[in-house]
Image 1 (tube, helix red, strand yellow):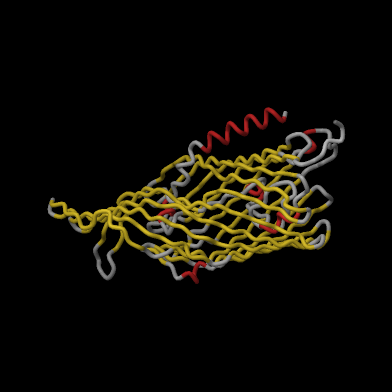
Image 2 (cartoon, one colour):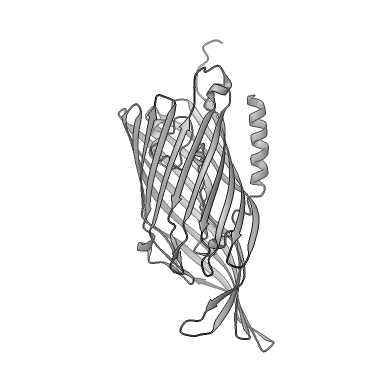
Length: 411
């Protein structure tokens, strides 16, 4: 059973990774550095991406660095994931369907001392892959309109270095240093009257951000946690070319001109979570996060950044009647997630709501497992020039556990 699960998991994940260039095709990735990417490890996608209060004892919890303080000794954890997403885009005039295959993350973690642990992970932070044709927009203080066509690609990546330390038996503290890097390519054409202006630019981003976290075990069945993501500035620079066509005459205004652009600001983000276990079979997780995007004073040509609220609720269940029976060790999970969104376009929030279900398939008698989840969600709405997204998502995460540095009892 173990060999079959590992073999099929590696095959599917490698297939998903090979398509990792097409990370997102959402029209909302037009804004800022693109759509923010949800990349959760282990069985977190199955429980609505909740888990700020869950320890990293049997899997790597990327939601809170303090979770590493609860790692077991001599256990080396490895996690790799991928996603397949089918999305239907709806506007007031048309409907379109697209499929995407995405790389999610690559991570490993290990204990440093009996009270601390370290993890390293690589995952996308945002994706900016979009294509919009002939979007009609009003000219300010006028009854006239102009048309925009846009196409883009790229995004930012996260390289996380996390450390967690346990103080006593109940309290853990943790910190993450995140290196963000990447670029976006944006080509836009503006049609005003009979003149066309095209702007092609490549923007490079780089920066560092810190996250602080804590977890506290109230008792053996109840844990609370919190996270604090420090505001950060991501430096940006661009290379741009501009051409204009009027009366069938093409003129070059700029050609590969390098310049600084407005830096991208990441907001203060505060999260709270709780985890409660009932009768050793059912576990409930509840999270709330607040992101203060409004304080970054950023805006887009077609929208505004606003404060964001996220709510997540998750359930996991395992019968554990007979540890020797494989089917009794399978875990079942479900969750819901609601996100008010950090963009406001035409006075409407681009919110997101989803529910998920999943399975945790153990591999032999270790913490290794294959986590499979299905999610359905809706993002945005049909209003004026806004677009509603209905998506089906399958997440596949392979979590492997290796026991290292243990002396043999029998030579």
